[in-house]
Length: 110
Image (cartoon, rainbow, N blue to C red; front, side):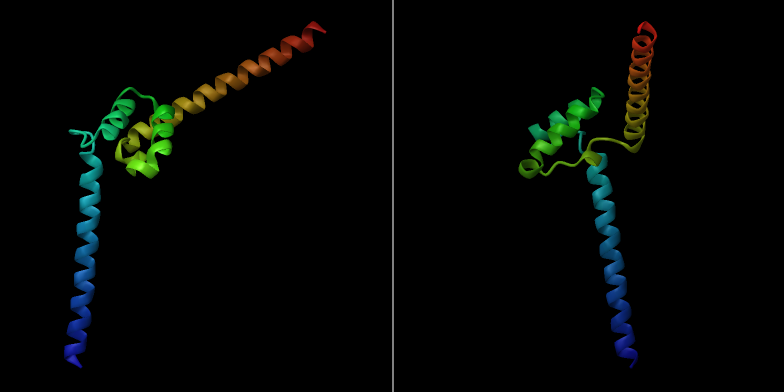
């Protein structure tokens, strides 16, 4: 009975260690993806991220995902993603305000 408990505990510890090792490996992979980029596709993705071109980066990753297996979090920090989202919302707000202004101008001129 003690042998089976010991074996079960060993399996749990082995699994926990494997899960920790994989998570640490993935974190390191994302952190150093652009330093230096391992391939031409990575270089292009890193360049687009550095130039603050989120839409171009997203399209590049989507178009080439089946070929290169690229993923947005490999090239963009959470901070950059938040900054890009705030900028996008601000731009959308300005566009909506401009449309409303145009509608009001048309209504007033009738």
